[in-house]
Amino acid sequence: MIRMNRIREKLNKNYSGFSLAETLVALLIVLMVSSILVAGLPAAFQAYSKVVDGANAQVLLSTGATRIRDELGFATDVYLPSGSTSTTVQGYSQNGFYKQMTNEVDSGIIINMKPSPDSSATTEMYLIPPKASTDSLVLSFRTISYDETNDIFTVAGLEVKKGGNTLASLGELKIRAVASPRVTRI
Image 1 (cartoon, rainbow, N blue to C red):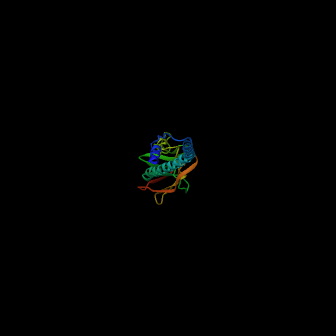
Image 2 (image 1 turned 45 degrees about the vertical axis):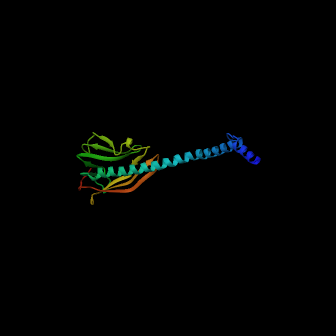
Image 3 (image 1 turned 90 degrees about the vertical axis):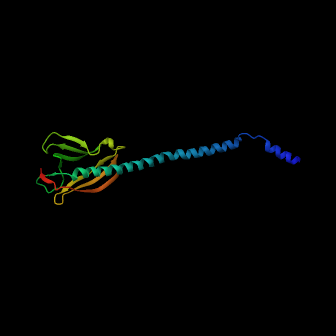
């Protein structure tokens, strides 16, 4: 019975808190886990940023291709350089306006609109407004050409860049004109 009393005494003793050794070990484990997490955060943010930029670039490329297809597909007139066999498009007409697509280095593709090819009154508008493009992404193309035999516009080198790095690209975009446009040599 004495032995049972001793066991009962030990069980009933109130031990409160942790010992110094237990506290130090727990603190060491927390510090190790925290340092691993802090070291990995910049890499995680960088990976996240790359994924988001890539997704935004794909959306901008798709939207830009659709807008270019809408602009060129409904052209009623196409203006080509005179005395040349080049199929480089100088401009196209839609709704009675002479339009010309050009690249602006920092802000993307601009459409210049005039009442006629020789008019000095010009209205500029962006194909994709800079506010609609996120994170300094810029849509551009290398060339636009027109095959008057088949009524096909070819946009070459359509790409989305950020700070000189290409994030998304489309080698060649072919657009068939809805109606056979009238070709004018300028």
